[in-house]
Image 1 (tube, helix red, strand yellow):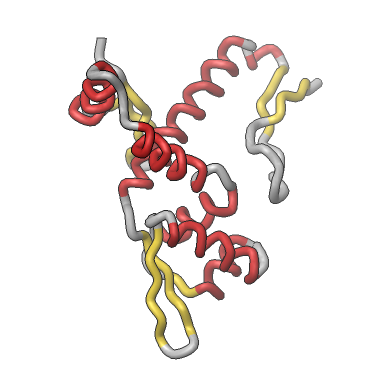
Image 2 (tube, rainbow, N blue to C red; image 1 turned 135 degrees about the horizontal axis):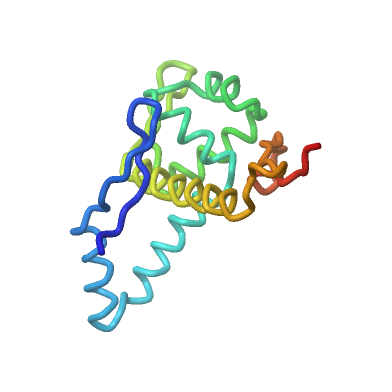
Amino acid sequence: MTKERLQPVQGREERQPLDPESATRWKQISSEGGFPDPLLELIAARFRLLGEPLRLKLLAALTGGERSVGELVALTGASQPNVSKHLAALMQGGLVKRRKVGTSIYYALADPSVLTLCDIVCAGVQERFTTLAQTLQLGSGLTLEEQPIEEGEAAGPDLRLRQ
């Protein structure tokens, strides 16, 4: 059975097989006695970097190309000190790079592979909630409603009954 994931294509979703080579590498290394602990620490640190919603917003904003701190503040709605703090963490982790021009600092993605990871995670979350919605038979009055997310809150749809 081929593992598949959802991938957006011109406003709709299509099933496409996962890259078998990348999945095979992970299985091969783990079956050969596992990863060395220092490597696992580096992998875990990369995942921790992505565990903050504002950092995900910043990465999403940078998919369109290089942006100044001021632009990122406007796009995310976060304060300048908060944006700068998270950009510093992303830069230290190797996910973004910066360039200084006069008094302005511009940030860009340093490791575009992080977008592939985000796409895979987003597709998995979407598939999970689609399955949940189908299981709950939403046609009978139960709907998934998006709720605004405040900084620091967990993301996800809210199940509410509609009359």
